[in-house]
Amino acid sequence: MELNNNMIDQCLTPTNLNPLSPNGFNFSITKLPEVSFFCQRVMIPSITLASIDHMNPFSNRPIPGEIMTFSELSVSFLVDEKMSNYKAIFNWMVALGFPESHDQYKNFMNKQGSDSVYSELARNYSDATVGVLDAQNNITNAFKFYDLFPISLDPVQFESTAMDVNYVIGSATFKYSYFTIDA
Image: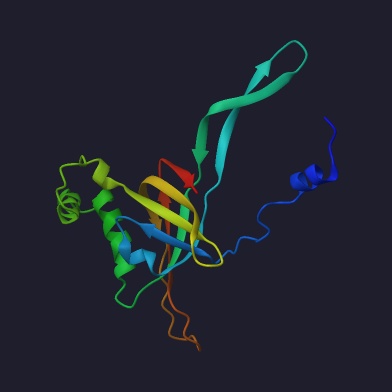
């Protein structure tokens, strides 16, 4: 088959020439609607696929393995004036860790509702979505995180010596089972 210039141009020219904007996104966690509006930064985590060495008499050759590792999801958000979004994550973590008594977990679960569709274990988790927006603020891709739960909440710093008002930024880190990308 002979290649003509038109076929070569089709192979080399991308169909979309618009670069991805880093500030075109929205974020939501099903269990934490307070965090969604104030989200400032979210980093899509890395993924790693393990490889296995296939040995032969001449050389070892890597082949794809079967185990994927997903790194943690980190989110930064403006802390609202009543600290509702910060406290929502804090209360979730306290319920999961119940540092004072088992009642902390039970009370948190009761506030979440007793939906019989989900087992008690499933109610420990939540799903989250990062929507990637185009120039018209339409979602072009959605990163969906499954079985998410918080593992750390960074400190909040108050400072009376600041000359300008620098609003408080909170950061949280989450573990999850896996994520998908839906277009």
